[in-house]
Length: 251
Image (tube, rainbow, N blue to C red; front, top):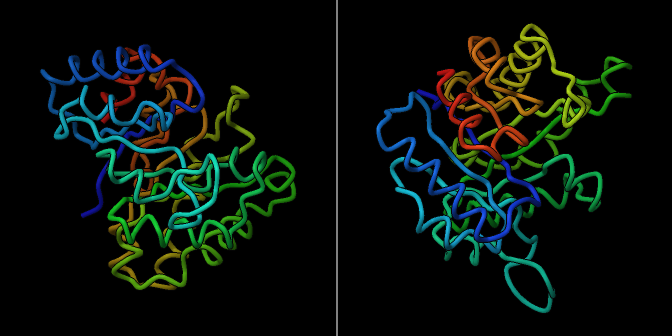
């Protein structure tokens, strides 16, 4: 059975001290709850080790927001998958639209990063999605299919089964726009069909597909009610414990 997941992506926010305080607050709130989903926080690389210490592993998983496309070597400023794993993190966010847009990450680059993440025992939260022009041209299906095929279809069914997909309608990130529940369900179902065509129905049925576009406590329940929406990759609303827990409670 696939897992419901609510994952926060703090992006480049919070100092170390602020991040530890937020993680501690979240952990304390969840201590008295039994969420009907896995909870993950994607934190800046400088914070990972301390956030891992601040949360109970059975309540909150920790993700890096990126890893390098090299094992090691003379790559100043980069952080390898092995380094991420050594911090105690269990997840890594790969292919976020901001990484693709601002840092030129390609499907070929992300293929290598995915392989390194899996080789080091990390669970990739792999982001896919279309920009506004592609949505307006009705090319969203073509875009997400290409992203999945070029970066992930070289994997065995067993390794693909370790991937979490996160669909980002890039036009809805930080804009206040939100795909309707019907739009979210439509493309999530399409993504699952693409996976089924390659790896079979069982793998597709067991793949968690998260929604990653301006999900808030006010709309999470309606979005998560869709049969093919298995949770969310949450940006701004993950920066306040109360808001993030409100989304977790939608399950």
